[in-house]
Length: 420
Image (cartoon, rainbow, N blue to C red; front, side):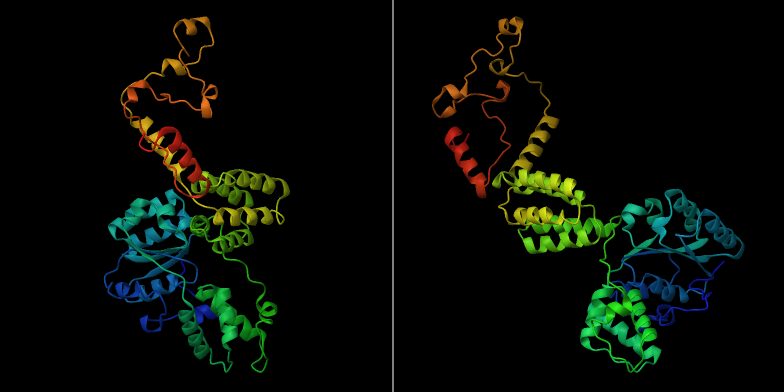
């Protein structure tokens, strides 16, 4: 069984060689490091956060002071068999620290296999994941662990790590601010990726060789957009996209749209979200919104990418710039809530009933109905709720003063009066 952070390959990546050995060398995660420093008793812990934010390094520094045997398993390549071997070893030797990387890859049953040993203290579980544990980790296991969330590194923290790596490698190379900023942009707060870039530059160029921002593509390859359709990042970006449109910021909306498209998101997923947004957040403030969103969905379905980006961009900018109203959205939810919670039975008023047969007509169905088009202004005061709802029938729809809905509100006020 490999020990934690074992060195069993001939080539040791630079990120491993320069890994901080103690708290004095660790950079970042200032919101949780003070708390971790105070943990002196072996305790099961879950670290979750983006790649390269320090999860493995924190586990390494923290467990070094516990004087317990350590074992490492990657949940990508390991299963119940390997876990059982560690659990059996713990029964023979005593408490073992088990580091599980990418624990979200374990199924629910695989995670359940750990519960008893964690509960009995046979293993101290230190786990790492890039996924939100609320979605991917068993509640029973979570309840037995301290949970710490890590965040992506800032540019200042990346620069500090970059300087530390240069000192540890003993290189005389200098990197201008433009090169550093480009490397920080490419790494997006991922220390492992940043150090990997540095390693490639040092191995591919001589100390006398001039490096420019333009030459980085040749040395490092093209940068892929950081976007995963299957993890929390996916939901965060679509959430930011929706909220930017709701906040009437077309530029921010286009930014998140571009992130999704460049990251390989299904354009039909985006189109469906635009349809919902058009009705929920624009509503009757602009009755053009929903037809445009439906047309966009159809266009995306029929022409595909890359051309589909054009109607998606048009619809996004229109919806973001349009006046907003969620009055119709609130109205249907209010009506549904009223119907679900109504205790008393009711009858459809006789004058509103359908009369398809003589029997219905004999019962009076439809009798007394006033046909609005026969009256001036195509309107006549009438009771449309069940009669038991009067004298104060419920009110669900409250038009706003936004865009076209203002005219709708004025029209209803003229017909029914402001206080009805």
